Image (tube, rainbow, N blue to C red; front, side, top):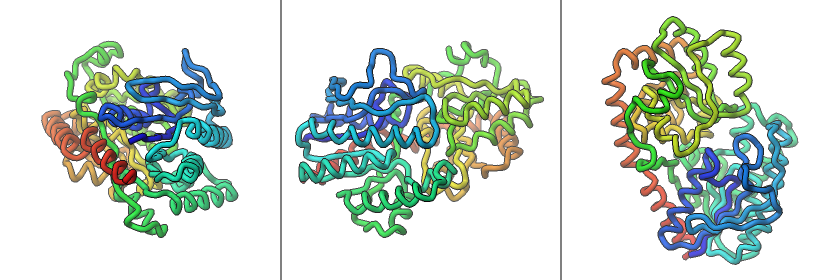
Length: 407
Protein backbone atom coordinates (compact mmCIF):
# COMPACT_ATOMS: atom_id res chain seq x y z
CA UNK A 1 0.00 0.00 0.00
CA UNK A 2 1.28 3.45 -0.93
CA UNK A 3 0.12 6.06 1.56
CA UNK A 4 0.28 9.80 0.85
CA UNK A 5 0.32 11.49 4.27
CA UNK A 6 -0.10 15.28 4.43
CA UNK A 7 0.64 17.36 7.53
CA UNK A 8 2.07 20.84 8.02
CA UNK A 9 4.80 19.79 10.43
CA UNK A 10 7.12 16.82 10.63
CA UNK A 11 8.98 15.65 13.73
CA UNK A 12 11.52 14.67 15.07
CA UNK A 13 12.97 18.05 14.10
CA UNK A 14 10.04 19.79 15.81
CA UNK A 15 8.49 19.48 19.26
CA UNK A 16 4.79 19.59 18.50
CA UNK A 17 1.75 17.52 17.74
CA UNK A 18 3.63 16.52 14.57
CA UNK A 19 5.32 13.85 16.68
CA UNK A 20 2.21 11.67 16.37
CA UNK A 21 1.98 12.02 12.59
CA UNK A 22 5.67 11.16 12.33
CA UNK A 23 5.32 8.14 14.58
CA UNK A 24 2.40 6.93 12.46
CA UNK A 25 4.43 7.32 9.26
CA UNK A 26 7.50 5.68 10.79
CA UNK A 27 5.58 2.65 12.08
CA UNK A 28 3.67 2.16 8.82
CA UNK A 29 6.95 2.25 6.90
CA UNK A 30 8.44 -0.25 9.36
CA UNK A 31 5.43 -2.52 8.67
CA UNK A 32 6.32 -2.55 4.98
CA UNK A 33 4.00 0.17 3.70
CA UNK A 34 5.23 2.77 1.20
CA UNK A 35 4.83 6.21 2.84
CA UNK A 36 5.23 9.66 1.30
CA UNK A 37 4.96 12.53 3.78
CA UNK A 38 4.17 15.97 2.33
CA UNK A 39 5.15 18.77 4.71
CA UNK A 40 6.96 22.13 4.86
CA UNK A 41 10.36 23.30 6.07
CA UNK A 42 10.70 22.74 9.85
CA UNK A 43 10.07 26.00 11.70
CA UNK A 44 7.86 25.32 14.75
CA UNK A 45 7.50 26.95 17.24
CA UNK A 46 9.73 29.96 16.51
CA UNK A 47 8.57 30.61 12.96
CA UNK A 48 12.16 30.44 11.68
CA UNK A 49 13.45 27.75 9.34
CA UNK A 50 15.73 25.37 11.22
CA UNK A 51 19.45 25.36 10.58
CA UNK A 52 20.39 23.03 7.74
CA UNK A 53 17.06 23.54 5.93
CA UNK A 54 15.78 26.00 3.34
CA UNK A 55 12.24 27.05 2.54
CA UNK A 56 12.35 25.63 -0.97
CA UNK A 57 9.64 25.32 -3.59
CA UNK A 58 10.17 21.56 -3.69
CA UNK A 59 12.62 19.26 -1.95
CA UNK A 60 12.72 15.54 -1.17
CA UNK A 61 14.63 13.49 1.40
CA UNK A 62 14.50 10.09 3.08
CA UNK A 63 14.14 9.43 6.81
CA UNK A 64 13.43 6.07 8.47
CA UNK A 65 12.05 4.60 5.27
CA UNK A 66 9.74 7.60 4.68
CA UNK A 67 9.95 9.71 1.53
CA UNK A 68 9.57 13.29 2.75
CA UNK A 69 8.43 15.94 0.29
CA UNK A 70 8.88 19.51 1.52
CA UNK A 71 7.12 22.39 -0.23
CA UNK A 72 7.23 26.15 0.16
CA UNK A 73 5.07 28.09 2.61
CA UNK A 74 4.99 31.58 4.06
CA UNK A 75 6.89 31.39 7.38
CA UNK A 76 7.03 34.22 9.91
CA UNK A 77 8.06 34.52 13.58
CA UNK A 78 5.02 36.75 14.08
CA UNK A 79 1.83 34.85 14.96
CA UNK A 80 -0.89 37.36 14.10
CA UNK A 81 -4.16 35.97 12.76
CA UNK A 82 -3.64 36.97 9.14
CA UNK A 83 -0.03 35.77 9.08
CA UNK A 84 -1.23 32.40 10.35
CA UNK A 85 -3.89 32.30 7.64
CA UNK A 86 -1.22 33.09 5.05
CA UNK A 87 1.00 30.35 6.47
CA UNK A 88 -1.83 27.79 6.35
CA UNK A 89 -3.00 28.88 2.93
CA UNK A 90 0.38 28.87 1.18
CA UNK A 91 1.31 25.46 2.53
CA UNK A 92 -2.09 24.03 1.66
CA UNK A 93 -1.65 25.27 -1.92
CA UNK A 94 1.93 24.05 -2.31
CA UNK A 95 1.04 20.68 -0.76
CA UNK A 96 -1.15 20.03 -3.81
CA UNK A 97 1.76 20.05 -6.25
CA UNK A 98 3.91 18.27 -3.67
CA UNK A 99 1.39 15.45 -3.64
CA UNK A 100 0.91 15.56 -7.40
CA UNK A 101 4.64 14.97 -8.01
CA UNK A 102 4.68 12.07 -5.53
CA UNK A 103 2.95 9.53 -7.75
CA UNK A 104 -0.44 7.91 -7.40
CA UNK A 105 -1.10 6.62 -3.88
CA UNK A 106 -3.59 3.99 -2.74
CA UNK A 107 -4.88 6.23 0.06
CA UNK A 108 -4.51 9.90 1.00
CA UNK A 109 -4.41 10.75 4.70
CA UNK A 110 -4.42 14.45 5.67
CA UNK A 111 -4.34 16.21 9.03
CA UNK A 112 -6.45 19.14 10.20
CA UNK A 113 -5.46 21.70 11.34
CA UNK A 114 -4.80 23.36 9.05
CA UNK A 115 -8.31 23.01 7.67
CA UNK A 116 -7.42 24.33 4.16
CA UNK A 117 -5.00 21.41 3.71
CA UNK A 118 -8.13 19.35 3.16
CA UNK A 119 -8.72 21.18 -0.12
CA UNK A 120 -5.38 19.96 -1.48
CA UNK A 121 -6.10 16.43 -0.24
CA UNK A 122 -9.57 16.46 -1.82
CA UNK A 123 -8.25 17.70 -5.18
CA UNK A 124 -5.56 15.01 -5.18
CA UNK A 125 -8.12 12.34 -4.33
CA UNK A 126 -10.21 13.52 -7.29
CA UNK A 127 -7.18 13.61 -9.58
CA UNK A 128 -5.96 10.14 -8.62
CA UNK A 129 -9.46 8.71 -7.95
CA UNK A 130 -8.38 7.29 -4.60
CA UNK A 131 -9.96 7.40 -1.12
CA UNK A 132 -9.12 10.28 1.20
CA UNK A 133 -9.20 10.08 5.01
CA UNK A 134 -9.25 13.36 6.93
CA UNK A 135 -7.83 13.25 10.46
CA UNK A 136 -9.32 15.90 12.79
CA UNK A 137 -7.11 16.76 15.77
CA UNK A 138 -8.92 20.04 16.41
CA UNK A 139 -12.36 21.10 15.24
CA UNK A 140 -11.93 24.19 13.10
CA UNK A 141 -13.31 26.78 12.99
CA UNK A 142 -15.06 25.93 16.30
CA UNK A 143 -11.81 25.94 18.30
CA UNK A 144 -10.58 29.24 16.86
CA UNK A 145 -13.96 30.90 17.46
CA UNK A 146 -14.18 29.62 21.05
CA UNK A 147 -10.63 30.77 21.79
CA UNK A 148 -11.39 34.26 20.46
CA UNK A 149 -8.78 33.96 17.70
CA UNK A 150 -11.32 33.98 14.86
CA UNK A 151 -13.67 36.96 15.12
CA UNK A 152 -14.02 38.27 11.59
CA UNK A 153 -17.56 37.44 10.43
CA UNK A 154 -16.54 36.87 6.84
CA UNK A 155 -13.72 34.55 7.90
CA UNK A 156 -16.05 32.60 10.22
CA UNK A 157 -18.60 32.12 7.42
CA UNK A 158 -15.85 31.11 5.00
CA UNK A 159 -14.23 28.52 7.27
CA UNK A 160 -17.60 27.15 8.41
CA UNK A 161 -18.58 26.62 4.76
CA UNK A 162 -15.16 25.09 4.02
CA UNK A 163 -15.56 22.72 6.97
CA UNK A 164 -18.93 21.46 5.69
CA UNK A 165 -17.58 21.17 2.14
CA UNK A 166 -14.64 19.01 3.22
CA UNK A 167 -16.66 16.82 5.60
CA UNK A 168 -19.07 15.99 2.79
CA UNK A 169 -16.30 15.06 0.36
CA UNK A 170 -13.90 13.12 2.58
CA UNK A 171 -14.18 9.36 2.23
CA UNK A 172 -13.80 9.00 5.98
CA UNK A 173 -13.22 11.22 9.02
CA UNK A 174 -10.86 10.01 11.73
CA UNK A 175 -11.49 11.68 15.12
CA UNK A 176 -9.58 11.85 18.40
CA UNK A 177 -12.52 11.67 20.81
CA UNK A 178 -16.17 10.80 21.32
CA UNK A 179 -16.87 14.52 21.88
CA UNK A 180 -15.68 15.12 18.31
CA UNK A 181 -18.01 12.40 17.08
CA UNK A 182 -20.99 13.98 18.84
CA UNK A 183 -20.07 17.39 17.41
CA UNK A 184 -19.98 16.08 13.84
CA UNK A 185 -23.17 14.05 14.22
CA UNK A 186 -24.92 17.27 15.27
CA UNK A 187 -23.57 18.86 12.08
CA UNK A 188 -25.22 16.14 10.02
CA UNK A 189 -22.20 13.99 9.20
CA UNK A 190 -23.30 10.34 8.76
CA UNK A 191 -22.26 8.05 11.63
CA UNK A 192 -20.78 5.43 9.28
CA UNK A 193 -18.33 8.04 8.01
CA UNK A 194 -16.79 8.56 11.47
CA UNK A 195 -14.37 6.59 13.61
CA UNK A 196 -12.45 7.44 16.77
CA UNK A 197 -8.76 6.66 17.22
CA UNK A 198 -7.47 8.54 20.25
CA UNK A 199 -4.29 10.52 20.61
CA UNK A 200 -1.53 8.36 22.03
CA UNK A 201 1.85 8.38 23.72
CA UNK A 202 4.73 5.97 23.24
CA UNK A 203 5.17 4.08 26.53
CA UNK A 204 8.62 2.99 25.37
CA UNK A 205 9.83 6.54 24.85
CA UNK A 206 7.98 8.38 27.64
CA UNK A 207 8.24 6.15 30.69
CA UNK A 208 8.59 6.39 34.47
CA UNK A 209 12.18 7.40 35.24
CA UNK A 210 13.90 8.45 38.47
CA UNK A 211 12.58 11.71 39.90
CA UNK A 212 16.06 12.96 40.80
CA UNK A 213 17.77 13.52 37.49
CA UNK A 214 19.87 15.92 35.43
CA UNK A 215 16.90 18.13 34.53
CA UNK A 216 16.27 18.82 38.22
CA UNK A 217 19.95 19.43 38.88
CA UNK A 218 20.35 21.76 35.91
CA UNK A 219 17.45 23.98 37.03
CA UNK A 220 18.09 23.86 40.78
CA UNK A 221 14.95 21.85 41.54
CA UNK A 222 16.47 19.05 43.65
CA UNK A 223 14.71 19.93 46.90
CA UNK A 224 11.46 21.12 45.32
CA UNK A 225 7.99 19.73 44.78
CA UNK A 226 7.75 20.37 41.03
CA UNK A 227 4.47 21.30 39.36
CA UNK A 228 5.17 20.98 35.61
CA UNK A 229 3.28 22.40 32.65
CA UNK A 230 4.90 21.39 29.35
CA UNK A 231 3.26 22.42 26.10
CA UNK A 232 1.93 25.22 23.99
CA UNK A 233 1.28 28.51 25.79
CA UNK A 234 -1.58 29.48 23.54
CA UNK A 235 -5.22 30.46 23.47
CA UNK A 236 -6.54 27.01 24.32
CA UNK A 237 -4.77 26.86 27.69
CA UNK A 238 -5.82 28.17 31.10
CA UNK A 239 -2.31 28.67 32.46
CA UNK A 240 -3.31 31.90 34.19
CA UNK A 241 -4.92 29.76 36.90
CA UNK A 242 -1.54 28.15 37.48
CA UNK A 243 0.15 31.52 37.95
CA UNK A 244 -2.58 32.64 40.34
CA UNK A 245 -2.10 29.41 42.31
CA UNK A 246 1.64 30.11 42.40
CA UNK A 247 0.84 33.52 43.86
CA UNK A 248 -1.27 31.89 46.58
CA UNK A 249 1.56 29.44 47.34
CA UNK A 250 4.42 31.93 47.35
CA UNK A 251 4.96 31.29 51.08
CA UNK A 252 5.57 27.57 50.39
CA UNK A 253 9.25 27.58 49.44
CA UNK A 254 9.40 23.90 48.51
CA UNK A 255 6.74 24.20 45.77
CA UNK A 256 8.05 25.28 42.34
CA UNK A 257 6.01 25.81 39.17
CA UNK A 258 7.88 25.02 35.96
CA UNK A 259 6.32 26.13 32.65
CA UNK A 260 8.04 24.68 29.58
CA UNK A 261 6.96 25.81 26.14
CA UNK A 262 6.30 28.62 23.70
CA UNK A 263 3.23 30.25 22.23
CA UNK A 264 1.33 33.45 21.58
CA UNK A 265 0.54 33.97 25.28
CA UNK A 266 4.04 33.44 26.66
CA UNK A 267 4.98 37.13 26.72
CA UNK A 268 1.75 37.95 28.56
CA UNK A 269 2.34 35.17 31.10
CA UNK A 270 5.93 36.30 31.66
CA UNK A 271 4.66 39.82 32.28
CA UNK A 272 2.14 38.54 34.86
CA UNK A 273 4.85 36.57 36.67
CA UNK A 274 7.17 39.58 36.74
CA UNK A 275 4.51 42.01 37.93
CA UNK A 276 3.47 39.63 40.72
CA UNK A 277 7.13 38.82 41.52
CA UNK A 278 6.49 35.09 41.34
CA UNK A 279 9.93 33.79 42.26
CA UNK A 280 8.45 30.28 42.55
CA UNK A 281 7.72 30.16 38.79
CA UNK A 282 10.34 29.10 36.24
CA UNK A 283 9.78 29.58 32.50
CA UNK A 284 11.79 27.41 30.08
CA UNK A 285 11.74 27.00 26.30
CA UNK A 286 10.71 23.77 24.62
CA UNK A 287 13.21 21.06 25.50
CA UNK A 288 14.91 18.79 22.94
CA UNK A 289 12.93 15.66 22.21
CA UNK A 290 15.71 13.45 23.56
CA UNK A 291 15.29 15.11 26.99
CA UNK A 292 11.51 14.93 27.02
CA UNK A 293 11.15 11.76 29.13
CA UNK A 294 13.67 13.05 31.68
CA UNK A 295 11.83 16.38 31.92
CA UNK A 296 8.51 14.61 32.50
CA UNK A 297 10.10 12.40 35.16
CA UNK A 298 11.38 15.48 37.03
CA UNK A 299 7.78 16.46 37.84
CA UNK A 300 5.93 15.51 41.00
CA UNK A 301 2.66 16.44 39.31
CA UNK A 302 2.07 17.45 35.69
CA UNK A 303 -0.62 19.86 34.56
CA UNK A 304 -2.96 19.81 31.58
CA UNK A 305 -5.23 22.81 31.07
CA UNK A 306 -8.22 23.50 28.86
CA UNK A 307 -10.14 26.71 28.36
CA UNK A 308 -13.84 26.15 29.29
CA UNK A 309 -15.03 27.30 25.87
CA UNK A 310 -12.98 24.53 24.24
CA UNK A 311 -14.21 21.61 26.32
CA UNK A 312 -15.93 19.94 23.35
CA UNK A 313 -13.54 20.86 20.55
CA UNK A 314 -10.04 20.07 21.84
CA UNK A 315 -8.20 17.22 23.58
CA UNK A 316 -4.59 18.17 24.50
CA UNK A 317 -2.18 15.38 23.63
CA UNK A 318 0.01 16.29 26.60
CA UNK A 319 -2.44 14.40 28.82
CA UNK A 320 -1.26 11.08 27.40
CA UNK A 321 2.42 11.92 27.78
CA UNK A 322 1.75 12.68 31.45
CA UNK A 323 0.05 9.31 31.86
CA UNK A 324 2.96 7.58 30.12
CA UNK A 325 5.44 9.28 32.50
CA UNK A 326 3.74 7.69 35.52
CA UNK A 327 3.07 11.01 37.22
CA UNK A 328 -0.28 12.22 38.63
CA UNK A 329 -2.33 14.55 36.46
CA UNK A 330 -3.66 17.89 37.65
CA UNK A 331 -6.31 18.72 35.05
CA UNK A 332 -7.54 22.31 35.05
CA UNK A 333 -10.48 21.58 32.79
CA UNK A 334 -14.29 21.55 32.76
CA UNK A 335 -15.72 18.43 34.38
CA UNK A 336 -17.72 17.60 31.23
CA UNK A 337 -14.62 17.71 29.00
CA UNK A 338 -12.97 14.62 27.53
CA UNK A 339 -9.80 15.50 29.47
CA UNK A 340 -11.65 15.34 32.78
CA UNK A 341 -13.46 12.15 31.78
CA UNK A 342 -10.20 10.35 30.93
CA UNK A 343 -8.59 11.42 34.23
CA UNK A 344 -11.59 10.47 36.32
CA UNK A 345 -12.16 7.17 34.53
CA UNK A 346 -8.54 6.13 35.07
CA UNK A 347 -8.35 7.61 38.62
CA UNK A 348 -4.98 9.00 37.60
CA UNK A 349 -5.23 12.54 38.95
CA UNK A 350 -7.36 15.42 40.12
CA UNK A 351 -9.71 17.65 38.09
CA UNK A 352 -10.23 21.32 39.00
CA UNK A 353 -12.70 23.60 37.26
CA UNK A 354 -10.96 26.48 35.40
CA UNK A 355 -11.21 29.84 37.13
CA UNK A 356 -10.59 28.48 40.64
CA UNK A 357 -6.90 29.08 41.45
CA UNK A 358 -7.56 28.60 45.17
CA UNK A 359 -8.64 25.02 44.51
CA UNK A 360 -5.62 24.51 42.25
CA UNK A 361 -3.42 25.66 45.15
CA UNK A 362 -5.29 23.38 47.56
CA UNK A 363 -4.77 20.34 45.34
CA UNK A 364 -1.09 21.11 44.80
CA UNK A 365 -0.65 21.21 48.58
CA UNK A 366 -2.61 17.96 48.91
CA UNK A 367 -0.39 16.18 46.39
CA UNK A 368 2.76 17.52 48.05
CA UNK A 369 1.60 16.25 51.45
CA UNK A 370 0.39 12.89 50.05
CA UNK A 371 3.09 11.88 47.59
CA UNK A 372 2.39 8.17 48.02
CA UNK A 373 -1.19 8.74 46.89
CA UNK A 374 0.09 10.78 43.95
CA UNK A 375 2.42 7.92 43.01
CA UNK A 376 -0.56 5.54 42.94
CA UNK A 377 -2.40 7.92 40.62
CA UNK A 378 0.63 7.95 38.34
CA UNK A 379 0.76 4.16 38.26
CA UNK A 380 -2.93 3.96 37.36
CA UNK A 381 -2.44 6.50 34.58
CA UNK A 382 0.47 4.51 33.17
CA UNK A 383 -1.59 1.31 33.21
CA UNK A 384 -4.51 3.06 31.45
CA UNK A 385 -2.14 4.44 28.83
CA UNK A 386 -0.63 1.04 28.11
CA UNK A 387 -4.08 -0.55 27.80
CA UNK A 388 -5.98 2.04 25.75
CA UNK A 389 -3.69 4.81 24.46
CA UNK A 390 -0.40 3.19 23.48
CA UNK A 391 1.37 3.95 20.22
CA UNK A 392 1.27 0.31 19.09
CA UNK A 393 -2.46 -0.06 19.68
CA UNK A 394 -3.45 3.20 17.98
CA UNK A 395 -1.14 2.78 14.98
CA UNK A 396 -2.57 -0.72 14.49
CA UNK A 397 -6.07 0.81 14.40
CA UNK A 398 -4.93 3.32 11.79
CA UNK A 399 -3.33 0.63 9.66
CA UNK A 400 -6.58 -1.37 9.68
CA UNK A 401 -8.53 1.76 8.68
CA UNK A 402 -6.14 2.52 5.80
CA UNK A 403 -6.24 -1.04 4.50
CA UNK A 404 -10.04 -1.05 4.53
CA UNK A 405 -10.09 2.25 2.65
CA UNK A 406 -7.61 1.00 0.07
CA UNK A 407 -9.74 -2.09 -0.45
